Image (tube, rainbow, N blue to C red; front, top):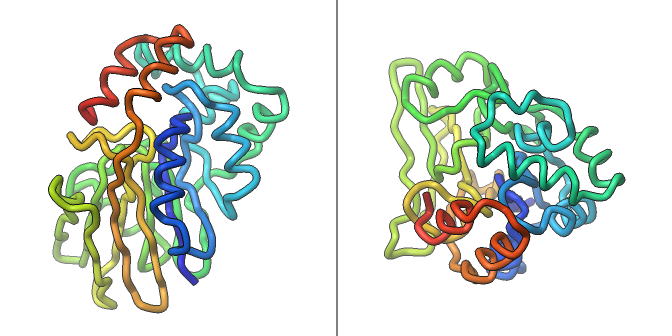
Length: 246
């Protein structure tokens, strides 16, 4: 079984479409680490696609906020404006779908997916210290998370961790062979709003039988996504940051 693992789609249809074309034929099932909506201008299209195609998904903080399940005071003004716009744009059926998304971590065939940390779905795992703190709370040897929009992650043992780097800007993929002697905490990166300095959409393919994760980056029509954001009346900074991966 091969899994296409996505995270942080953020209603960016152009990025999602490019990922699906790039990954065509390379996977059997699709998983998502949350944040289907927020920021970009195609929330209904993104939610409709998830409902029709994703086997398992956990909720993200933007999914909760748009569905009215989280207080917006934790969001900056730009994120608040995008959340309110998205809430008005979504169909009642898609809002109900977001309200029903499960909290992570969620086990899938011997590994798990989550949005943030296993301690708190809204916490970020960015540093080695945060990864080591999470180690005692993961229930499987391999875990996938999102939330940071930073592709990579950590290989961990009790005495320390090794960082997993994002795909190099000059390449389109990076292969990770998973060791039985280390726990793996892997972020596929953000499909719809990368923040690691690379504007290309990010995702990964996981093959448990081969103990192999392949991280990918794929270019997409950034200008089309930017144009939609501006035309929808969303904050222009959301369009600008897509061009620089920030």
